[in-house]
Image 1 (cartoon, each protein chain N blue to C red):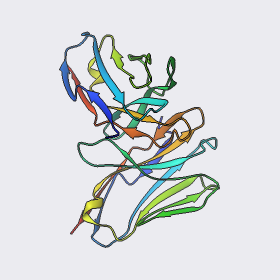
Image 2: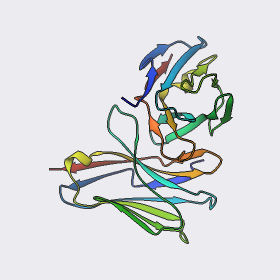
Image 3: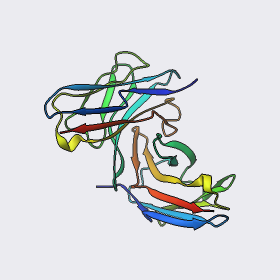
Length: 113
Length: 111
């Protein structure tokens, strides 16, 4: 089944404790992206990647890191999480030719206390 | 600052009625305007998309109307069904691979 998977689905952590949210897709997509969803703000793009080893900042990159060492994986790293990073996070992927047609993962609910 | 402004925040419609969601943008460099549908507990899924050189696009009961001069576009859901109850996001895509979303509209269709 073609899909984007994220792990973990739920995570509660404390301020300052480094964490990684994994994202993997099995559709051979070149483009991958991370978003956060907050009430009243919709989805905001954090980082995106056009291909392996090519990443760029979205609208809200502060406090986040990403890497793209393999085509199928695009992990999101929070080096020192803070409470304002409590949010619902989505990973998405698409073919480079139709980057607006993105396939989203199921989401990761992160709570930072 | 939200690059795409969406309204209303929520709406309730009777089964068989028409749901209308409106969006506006400022950046004329946007070159694609997709709409995404999100059910509770799920990720968004592409519903329909339109280019700015097209004034209307229809797929089944879903229609996008696009007014380039006014920098506005809207989604019409005809013959709304309870299964259409979801949150709808308009979005705008820049050819530098950035996708900007509106704040979302929660649609509730009453049987």
